[in-house]
Image (cartoon, rainbow, N blue to C red; front, side, top):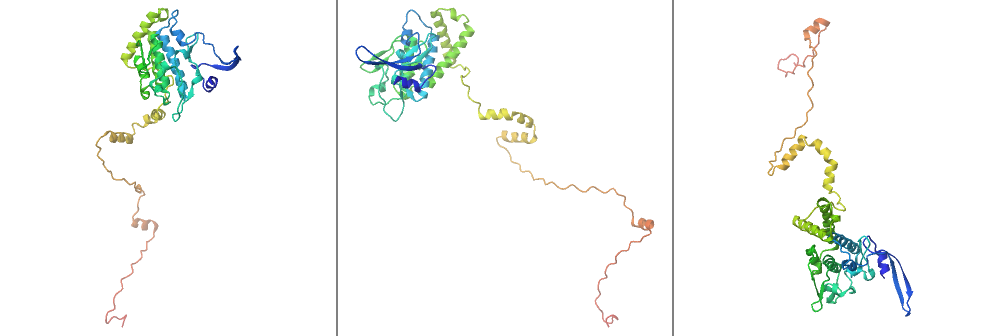
Length: 343
């Protein structure tokens, strides 16, 4: 089942599985095993409690980012791990943390009841209700307990009577996010995407801070490194937020894209009288509407003739011609008595 889960999902911070096999034990029991990539440092629990090799808070933050990215990958494929804890997270030789033990990972369907499987001291309150109703926030709860153990190197206490977890020691960093992850109300817990973004932004800001102000950071002892990081973290919290360059910058808004494309045309037409008049009209909060009469275009007048006019008398003298004028028709007269024409 774990092999099938690994085939369905793979990522940079999820343990790679190459296959599986089986063998017969001396007592006649058949044992199955998985073939995975080698993680030299073993589980995260071994790394945390290894007294011979301590790790800095900065490196712990990097591993916390790895786990958050793996959890976000799981949830992005509608899956629930159901048992994220230090024993199920494996660490490579260069301190890359990967989520393993996918045997109980299950596809999440909000309309179905889910089997409750996991480590009891890490389970959230909804586990003990016994109704099988839980969602991906269960992984966020167990992730918060994992973060607290990673940063404090102390395992939390589980109250058997109240079925509640109790933090023995408060983490020097990200205390508020750890408390948000282990809230009793599952709907009030942050999502894997929110946790990943928060941790990645802090890590990017820490890298810039150390590079600018602590060039000899690598030569310092673990205690000195942790003091430098805690100083950065308090400064980071006071500022509220630091705006790093996003890993995947968002696409430009349609308006800015339109302005970039048509900005040259806008600059050319900004002095156009019509544009200026329109801007004044829009800027005026109480514009007075003036209706101007429509000017009709008339045909241009015929240009005056410059030809020299000759009088009628001069024409008769020059050409010897007389212009015969048509006589007007006389008005008819009414006949009178004694008129010879009508006698």
